[in-house]
Structure formats: structure tokens, C-alpha cells
Length: 447
Ligand code: MV4
Image 1 (cartoon, rainbow, N blue to C red):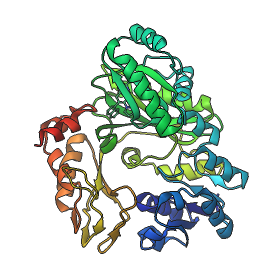
Image 2: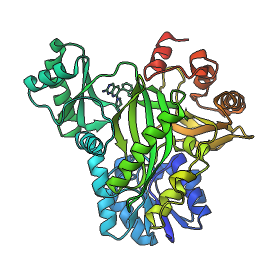
Image 3: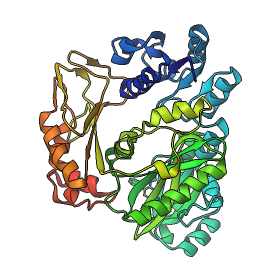
């Protein structure tokens, strides 16, 4: 097991990882920017190293500073959290070259999944169902038209270096295709320095369902069920739940088993998430994330398994603590992302939190690094905490969520809490009847 882990992140996830390290008796080092000196995780860590000024480029993304902090403190592993360097293959490779363990998959696996064309090709080869579309990159209008005619309109053009919704264009008819292809290519070139694009059938009313997987790096793979993350705004998830209200037990184990086997065959190590669009009873792979995700607590709630413990165990060579048959799905969990934003316009609202009171009681978890008197710096994303609620079934979970939202107090700044108080009373949400476009339509109606 590791002696000392360096946490290369900030905010609630840095605290989340710190807690796991403490439970495992592992010493902790945090690196932080000058904007985060007062952060809770910095106070609670055994050691902290200030690695630079507020801009992420010069601190949380500064590989050399982070490697230097490992050398100075004698950390033997790095947990990258999510965002920042968590899916940076070069960072994983550089740490390996310094004999420091990256708590995550190999640089090569990160690289494959970062290239969306290569990721899709790999998924298909491993027996994962993918969205119908081009086999690789599309360069010519003629090729695009041939593929589109074959799969049928509407089609979507995506950047291979994109992901998470960046660099996509929809073409509804052949007349739209040339413009969509050229725009997608030039935008991809400008944004990513790589203009490779591919074409897929555009699914009009899917749900976003993702499967939590783990590999031990030695040919074993397991799945921890799915999460439904269909409630999003501008590709930012707002509300996530497990299990998906749309799936039955047979569908859950069918897609889960496919994913677990793929992860085993790939020789993948650590936590991963395989993302699907789900429409009319079918799953279609879109991307794989090679990191721990923001919404991992809903999976922890229904399985009772600490996923950060598993990451650390696997990275240290201790293997997974569970076999597939040990993983049971118990009840229902919902996560609300509490952002320091206006609940209608989503404009960031940094500043000082004058009062912070979190709900409690059976089935309630709050993951947050903020406290009364804390000043939210304006430089980073606006997530200030996550409310995760568990119940024996979805109805009980929703009852508890409504009560927990009533107890939650955040004064001094605007937050998205009022949005969740509206959502929890909405009949479509109560019925689990929503797709990836539901939230934006709801917000546009201004209800
Ligand atoms: C799609 C799609 C429809 N058809 N692909 C957006 C994020 C990126 N991960 C993939 N995305 C989409 N890909 C096909 N073939 C619709 C979306 C999409 C979306 C997906 C998940 C959650 C919210 C979304 C909002 C708009 C579009």
C-alpha cells in the first residue's frame, strides 16, 4: 500500500480523496494555488504545497510543479480527481517515468479514449454496441454523403479530439451536410489543433446512461451498474441518479456484463465510465471517461462500496476488493450538483458564503469543501457541493430529497438550490420521464 498520496485537485473532490486516504491510514499531501490557501482540504491535509498563482494553467495544470511537489514531499502516488490532469496521458506517462504511481489507468488507455474515433473503434472491437456511423475520420463531402445516406438523416458530425459535447454539428438533410462538415472541421481544427471528424446517426430523444466500470489491470473487470445523467444544461450535468428510472434489471445486467467483459479484455486498470445514449430499448456507446466522475457517489450509495478506496487498492497492486457477484444494487440514489450560480441564468456567483448549513439524517450525504465564512474564488468551476440522497426505492429517495433541500441553507451567494426545489416537485421528474433535452426545454419555458 502507498505511504503518501499527493492530491492534485481542489474543492470537494480533493476533500473526498483526502477522506479516503485518511481511512486507509495513508499520509496526504495537497497541492494548491494561492487562491485556495483557505480551502478545507488544505487545512485537513498532513502537508500542503503552494504550486502557483490562481490560473489553472500555472497551478493545477502545471505538471512540472506537481512532479516537483511529489519529489519534495516523497509522495509515492498521485490522485488526480476529475478535470484538470485526470485524463492527461502525458501526465500519467511522466509520473510513471518518475516511479510515481498515477492513480488511474495507463497513459495508453487514456490516449485511446481521448481520441473519440479510436475509442469508438476500440469499443466496437470489444463487443460494445456503438452508434451507427462512419468507421473512421471523414474528409470528403462525397464520403460524408455516402455514409449519411446509408445510416439515414439526421446525422451528427463530431470532432475526434472533442468529447463532452464540444465540436458537434447536426445535419437534418443532405443540403445541410457540406456546411456542417466544413464548420465542424474548421471549428475542431481551431479548438483542438486536430480537424479529424466522424459521422453518426443523430438520436433525437435519447437518455444519457453511463456504466461505472473497474478493471484490476490484470484481466479482471467488474461493473457497478449505471447512472442516468440525462438532466443536463449545456453539457453540464445537473442531476444524476442510480439506478436509471428507464432500465429494468435485465437491461442493467446485459449492458453491465458487456462493459465488464470489455474492460477485462482491454486489460484496463482503475475506474472508468462507459457512456451510452439509450433510446427505444437500445444502448449506443458514445464515449468512455477514464477517471472518477463527479457523480460517483450515487453508485457508492446503491452499492455501499467506496470507489476511491477501490481506485487506491487497484493502483497499489492490491486488486479489487469485490467480485461481480458481491456487487448488489440496493435502493435508489439521486445527486444534485449545487453550483454557485444564479438558478435561472446560471451566471457564476462567487463571493463569501455568510452561512452554510447542511441537511442530515438517514440517507443524506453532502460532499462539499466550503464552510460558513468561506470566500469562493472566481477562477474555477462553480461546483460548491453535492447533495446525495439514498432511499429504499425512488419514491422514498424523492421524499428525503425534498426534505433535505428544505433544510439546506447557503447564504451570501446565489446557488442552484432553488432549481432543485422546483424539480423535485415536477411530475415528469417524479415519474422519471425525461430525456437529454428535458431540462433545457423546461428552463426555456421559464416555469
Ligand atoms: C449525440 C447525440 C445524439 N446522437 N450523438 C453530447 C455530449 C457528448 N458526450 C455526446 N453528445 C450527444 N451525442 C448522437 N449520435 C446527442 C448528444 C447530446 C447530449 C448527450 C448527452 C447528454 C446531453 C446531451 C445534450 C445535447 C446533445
